Image (cartoon, rainbow, N blue to C red; front, side, top):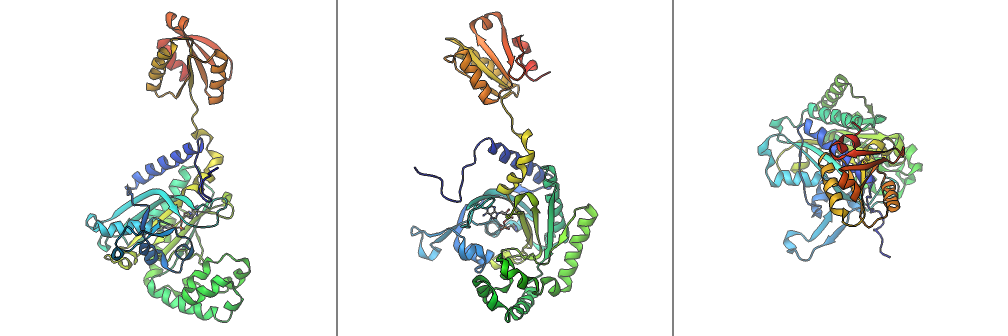
Amino acid sequence: MIKAVRGTRDLLPPDTALWNFVEAAVRDVFRAYNFQEIRTPIFEETALFSRSVGEETDIVSKEMYTWEDRGRAASDGQSLTLRPEATAGIVRAYIEHKLWDRGLNKLYLIGPMFRRERPQKGRYRQFYQIDAEIIGPVSSGSDSPARDAEVLEMLATLLNRLGITDWNLELNSVGCANDRAKFNEALRQALEPVVGKMCADCQRRAVTNPLRVFDCKVPEDQPIIEKLPRISQFLDESCRTHFEAVQNILKSVGVEFRINDRLVRGLDYYTRTAFEFTHGALGAQNAILGGGRYDGLSESLGGPAAPGIGFAIGEDRLVMSLKETAEGVLRKPDVYVAPLGPGMNGEAARLARELRQHDLVVELGDENFRLKKSFEAATKAGAKYILIVGENEVKAGAFALKNLASGEQVSVVRAELVGRIQGK
Ligand code: HAM
């Protein structure tokens, strides 16, 4: 038997209704903030990710699905990769299509991402992100702390609107390239005497990219990491002012946050503001979304200066934290239309069509079903009513309508069916 590949999964009804509910709500909120949809390919040249996410990150060093496409000219680069995240592709598209001509771009993308991580609850090898980015030339104000705060306030609004209220916003500033160079040097020095006691990954990171030590999840290493210097001590004046401005706007719109100066995020392109929203109910994989600013990313991909800020929500995790409260989202059939006896399928289809035009959810049976089987099917479908369409009913112009929960049955003339089923 062939099964879905480990770490991938099918999304089945009724859960898909939750996914659609989330996406509809998200698109609605995005519209209010003037974000517009972008779609990019699900695979790109491998170099795009190593140059943006970073060679030394877990994502690029061990989690990418990469293959050689010999159908491409060697000069074009034959190494291709399933996108592990969306930001790199969006910034590539920004550069390729000269989107700076449009001033400030507010873009969002919903789609699957791929990382070869060890699968567990809330962690998959194919997962879905709801990603949003604000990017543009400096003249468009893309580097303003007002944009950081706008994105964070939008996220708070979105989560609250979905009924997820027990979230925590963890906020940090990871400074600019200069600050990070100084911080990396300080980290290297601080690590030197202790790194021998740390895990193999940390020993490698200490040499290649010390900042990544903060990604370490090995419990024994945590007391050592606790004592390391923090990026907050290395921020220059402009980064500190920027970070304070973000916090002040958040306070004035009443969005609560907690400063977490250990938060460095698992991707190399971040500058200044970095953040995560966590949710208690999710367990170990408690980051429901993450994001931050990436003021130098466009240049590192060969584009012009284009400061930006964005985030990606893990849609799988968002749906998971929604499940408890989402009963109302799932709409069951209002009525099961049961044709009874030969020649009744056409009459029943006509009636079903009328009812559906009035925004009722209608399940339609088959004239070959005996009445008992129709009742069973209606009950299984979770329908509220069953409507019997037999020869006598059609002749009389009135139909037997039975409430499956209460057992109450009435005869209803055609013109009154919609109102009756809608409960008016
Ligand atoms: P990230 O923190 O790597 O950031 O991923 C964002 C979110 O995607 C995570 O918080 C998590 O909810 C979800 N996620 C990540 N990996 C998995 C997985 N294996 N299974 C299920 N969910 C997962 C980024 O990807 C950045 N591109 C975000 C960003 C956009 N920063 C600026 N703009």
